[in-house]
Image (cartoon, rainbow, N blue to C red):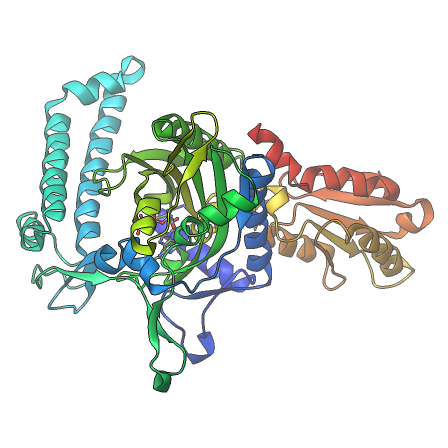
Length: 512
Ligand code: ATP
């Protein structure tokens, strides 16, 4: 399927089956803000549970907190967000569309990657079995030139951003002849910095209200609670604090469904270590996080590592896990080694000591931090992108979401074949047993075929059909979503059979 079509289909499917609705749709919607419907909320909660348990339950030294969205305004001065949480924006004078200058340049560089891929594929066809991709990339003059061009562009861009030279960034866009995708023109305004934080007022305005910010990341709630958790939890280094919560960013370009939202959710973990140990832990967390993704069973080729071209001034290492969304490889998660920057800043701005006292060495110091930061909504989109499938079944096509069973919104649908002869009662009996352990649905409307399709479309891994034979011998049909296979199973075996498959443990056990 063409990837663009796939993306449109996923968006339509999300709406039709109660996963995601545009916020305030009744009033024509609010741009880049979304509501999760009945199935979306379940899937989202299950992703959260998978992450939370993987972080806290599976790692003895990681604990979770839930800090407030509103924080003291000085937090954002200390963290650097007031002065430097900016994106460079540029407008096209003809279409009046606004773009992120860095994204325009990165997309241009990505297009060169596509050209390299085409050269590689052409050569693969020409050379057949003897083709050595690595050697080709290193020796083919056209590919060498393409790669050099990419390096040169990024070098100019990074140097200009580091020097705060926005005119140079604009010149680069002009020199590369980048055109507006809407108007096709190269009629650009100057590049300006735009702060992404939303502000609001605390207290009534007449009382002399304070300007506060909606947090643009959850991490600062962890940093300012470092001492509280360390002391009350009697935590010893290394240890981590995890958190899931909303974050808000006034994104300039917000056109990719739930990939880039103005209100979204993050799942972040800050891991506090002894200075000098950070690279070891950075590597460990890179490995742990990739394992978490791969345990979902999605094609591993859809994930790749991306090293940051431009490190934040306080970071000494940063990698992203990118995922191949229908619109290309994009950031899903960041793993960053942030040194002692944040805690030291909070020491300075609060005037209070934020130290760790090491009993063994008798020293006290500000810990270093390795963080893992993943977008919950982006994870949701990876799962939908990878699990949405259209399959030919006879003359028919079925749409099925092959979501990993522990994450599926509904685990089991219980379906009486007809609405009479004691079948609904028997179906209810099964439901009443299962509902304590998992989210189930009872459906008696429409033909059984239609009911199966509806359950496939929301990703329900199991359907249990109760028929006349069930009344006689207390056996039922268990239908498997992915294979569509059906088996006859005694009613008293159902709970155990299904439970082992849908239990979060099936994912978590792949992490050890
Ligand atoms: P991008 O470069 O895509 O803007 P970022 O580098 O600013 O992302 P971080 O600040 O590292 O992102 O945030 C950590 C994670 O939070 C990201 O990897 C992403 O999954 C998620 N995230 C960030 N911004 C958004 C957004 N506007 N909408 C949805 N998720 C987001």
